[in-house]
Amino acid sequence: MNQLGLRVVRPLVEQQARRSEHTPPNARFLRRLLETRLVGTGLTISAVVLLCALAAPLLAPYDPNAQDYLAITEPPSLAHPLGTDDLGRDLLSRIIYGSRISLEVGLIAVGIAVGAGVALGIVAGYAGGITDDGIMRVVDAIQAFPNLILALAITAALGPSVANAMLAIGFVAAPGIARLTRGQTLSVREREFIAAARVCGATPLGIMRRHIWPNVTAPIVVQATLLLGTAIVTEAALSFLGVGVQPPTASWGAMLRTGSQYLEVAPWIGIAPGAAIFLTVLAFNFLGDGLRRALDPRLAGRKRQ
Image (cartoon, rainbow, N blue to C red; front, side, top):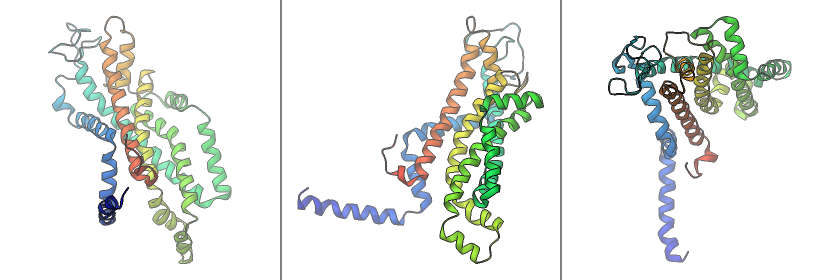
């Protein structure tokens, strides 16, 4: 680049750097988040699913459990945009109401996993020694089993219900959060401000709550967003296998199970809930990836996808 080009470009670069320095951290985070193109898609789909869950009685054209034996397995039409199932129930209404179950189970299960996992991870990482070894051996033992198989066994033992599905999904997801939190805690506990807090007489509980927890939040938020999609898939799988949400409650997994029995004569019964699960999980994966890029400075400057 010639001298003229340098004289033109340098002030622009310096001006941009000064502007970046004065930009509030929250604004920089939001800008980095929205620079990832797929985040917009994820936000849009998530907003639609949330709207369906919150306003289901207003949006659903029919009662999701109303049976019409004169309209059994009808294909999509103006009266039933997604068709009807084997009992003549409107699929669009059941998809809309099913979003409530999926989000409810997903959010509560992730809340259980994050609450238990963060507590165990911080205690293990900060305490070390026998406490760390004991907690991590339990975590290893749980993670030795496939998540779906373990969740299926727990739900079958406790009995099929929405509450038990939440507990089972939260239980099998907690070890992953615990391991992530422990790794972050091991890094944070060696910093100078932790040593300063000890010198000032802070208790271990106070250090974990006031100094460690705020500094390990970012990766946990990202993982929780990704875990939400996994929880929705697991709930659908449990309902598909008959140990999750029970009839006649509208559930995407239970609808998918019914659709699998009519693939040849009425494929739309399975296509609708399958598409709902796919798009919802994809949306939360997009959001999780966007949060990861926005919160990780090493990825913030890379090409947005």
